[in-house]
Length: 292
Image 1 (tube, helix red, strand yellow):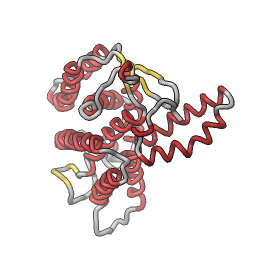
Image 2 (cartoon, rainbow, N blue to C red):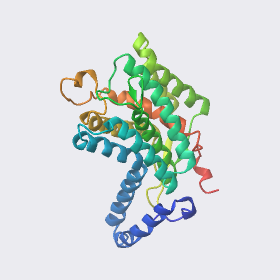
Image 3 (cartoon, rainbow, N blue to C red):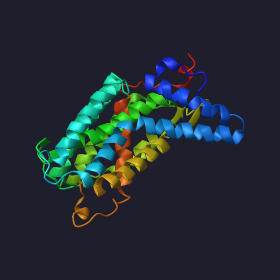
């Protein structure tokens, strides 16, 4: 696996995974194509490992949609709340997540639930099923869906050893994130500034590259591209979740249809909020600090 990376920074399950894949790497090293293929494999493995909380929650949402008994003594949404809490506890007990990552999840749960309370009150979307564990029209499992984004970013920050080149001053990133969050509310009162925010994001992060390490070599990509890719995967997950009736947009109440691609812009802006919040628990480090 990655040479020059301190194994002490990895959790036990990750070290076991590295040993399991070592034999595959030894065979892949025989050719340039094999080395490239193994690096691509490792990128996918690490991304999937970082998504473990969100992926497990999405799987439960889909399974319970089709297999939850109609007359079960506990509502499906309430069962998802309990399952999410148990998953979070298990990840801490088995050290799949550290306390800083759990703190990031808590932040996202609070931020996401606040937005959910407002958005459901103005009819942006709704939760069609009955539940007891809810605030107003918002079942409590919804906060964990936002938290899964924070979990992914916090975990991938550690797993891929993220570093940043030409990162902007922190006040600029925080001001942008605050503007994005406020716009999720203000757009219902005729103050939709998303295009201004897109421009501001392009300006603030125009020179920023994220450096990551899928295997041995350090790779880089524009951070804005990273936000865009994160938004794409959130949108794909959103389509699976709405298909499973986790929540519904007004256009989906008479029959499911694909979530409008325009939502990608909203998810890109949410990715920026997510990234900035995670920077509270995962310090932004420049490339030269990696070798220090």
